[in-house]
Image (cartoon, rainbow, N blue to C red; front, side, top):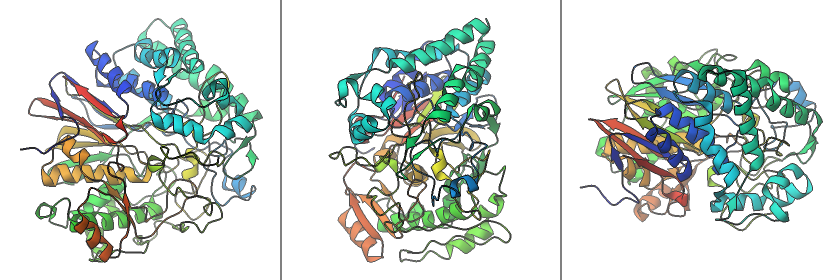
Length: 603
């Protein structure tokens, strides 16, 4: 008999939609009800998330997508825009920077989300541009209720908006005040921007395909690109460096880039094939952890036991150390993924795991490959001395009392969605970037630009060193699993560096302990910040292990005895998973109850 869950595991046959906000989930389901497929629904949900989760993503952000068509191969859509042509290492060094700022315009890369969604709509969707944008436009024009974290986020950067980012104040500080939780909020500039794209696209072509292609051109070369270009050339923006800086991004960068398809990177584990992005994202870390854990009999353990938490955590430390040493845009860096996922390599690496917690950052050695691992200990870097919120945007305490403004250092985060339609098409996507505290609103567009370049290192020996046209080694990492070679499950989570921890824990609990989708999501969360963070100020906390207080006290005590630097977090505070699966004719879906925002529906 299944245990208690916060909400039911959704079961149906027609279609299931799950995302990190109930309004986006509802938009996706409405598209399915109108006859659209999973890709149409994902686009509607994705654009809706830009509106209703503006503290977590926006039109100026990015999105990696994994698609599994019922009649075709699994593909990755690369919606991660690259660094601008002017973004050389020397340009940042000339500004006397140790790391790329965590906010402002210096960290802006090409916004990739719009073109990625359009590419999927063109090749996999069935509905018109107007159909899939209707819900997002409606939310922006007519309003939506603010969840508490949006209001708290706006309040945390209120003085920055008032004193420096005045275009953002015009959108988010109506009548000079921060909005309250539950208040109806509108972004008419964004609605007008999307309406104009549709009108110009429809004027350019009568066909669905022609309108989509026209919209792509309008974004990259038309009025959207022109407004971005003008803003980037003229604005000097306060950022986390404590100085006002201009952008390196310009209109030519947008015109030269478009989203592309890639083959997924895969790994076979206990009858499942896991599909992830390549090492321009952190997705392969999930696979490396599986390669290490394959050597243990996890079926014999209890999922609340200290041994389970310890083995998973120690494996994460090794895999994430390799992320730092080897991962980067494979168009620029030779990333030895075959070796990193090989049995021989992982048999050697597994020997480093003992019954004691490691306090070292230990990347592997592969002759002629890899580079420097930049280690900045928590609170010791100049940028981090006054930063108490190390690491991941998801766990930023927006529900606490607002702290003094830190020049945009208030973290943003990410969204996620998973959808399966009645035909069996699957899509998993992790939209992010361009959150409201990233950089100032671009006048006339209603959105701001991503600051994903903060994930580059300013170290020429790092595989993730910044370079023109190079993709930042993003944390965004949707997941898709085949079971016995057949598409089975789409899943993922927001969470930056925690994404390939939380999603792994979910997967392991489902595979090894028989938990259904909702049970695996509801299970007590844990994570480590042992390795270098992907977010400004790029620090690490060796030995750190955070656990929800719902773990047994005996487990917590034993993990402390093993040397883990245990931090007991509030109950229901770690994780934001969603998942959708198809098995034996049934569609299933589940969503995270934490923060009372994510939702799964279906029939």
